[in-house]
Image 1 (cartoon, rainbow, N blue to C red):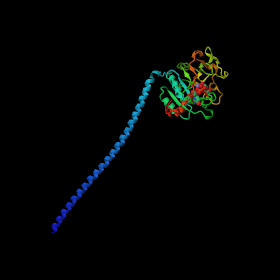
Image 2 (cartoon, rainbow, N blue to C red):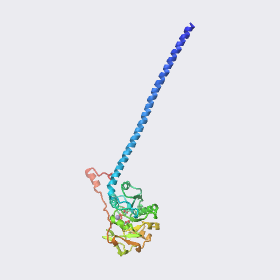
Image 3 (cartoon, rainbow, N blue to C red):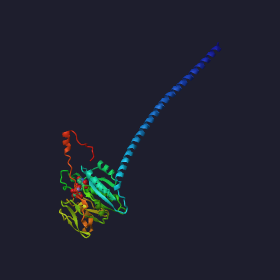
Length: 343
Ligand code: UGA
Ligand code: MN
């Protein structure tokens, strides 16, 4: 009887053990299945994240390739105009004040296309503005000549308003000074030989003019057309020296010459570190002021352009454009031009 119960108990023990083992096995298998599903989800999520990341990278690479292709296209387009850099030639540093207005990009484009024909030129473009504008930044990015982009705003009390006559206040003063600061702080006069020319953005320059000024010893001078309400203004020359001036407006100024009519050997700006333009000078005295501060005398002037007999620069001024039909067009036809179109 006892033996029977022990056997039964043994069977029961074996049976429950098997059940427990089976139960454990089953638990383990479903647990692993659950783990597998969770793991798979995690891997899928990680893979999706990686894929998104790679897609973003691909998009940015495509964008970069497109912009490089665009640049390459421009380089190919402009290459025929590029002259090789010649290390034996002094560089011409042009300081150009410029300000935001409808005509600005047209002026800069015209000037840039001239400069493309000039070897060893460095264009210092100075915006009359608190910050550099996207328009000029974009314009310069596509320029295939060495340039420096600066900005400084003309203070409100000396700033010309669009209703003012343009002679009322001086223009481009702080901008030219910013260009001079850049030259004095970035260039080494022992290594960098050069000539400084204050080239306003609205004049018309012959390519020949730059070769005339390139070998300036102190100050080169030449005639300027369409200025001072004359056909042209000019130094009067006798052989290789300047003896007087053909001008109508204030002929008694120390140097009655337009900004476009002279270029200065860069060394002079290092020899005279206090030579700056100023907003506090009489009308028409900007040029005389800077030349005086550079201790220039009449004897230092070097006549160029075939002893001042040729016109190589024109004081052109672009007529202010008035887009007066914009508002009328909206009224009449209910549509206007796209304000986002860059002109
Ligand atoms: C004449 C001379 O040619 C200038 O060199 C001289 O600075 C000016 O007179 C003066 O007496 O102040 P004008 O044609 O009357 O020039 O002047 P703009 O061409 O209107 O201005 C000269 C430069 O300054 C240009 O490059 C122009 O873009 C720039 N400018 C003009 C500014 O940077 N901000 C302004 O508000 C106006
Ligand atoms: Mn001008």
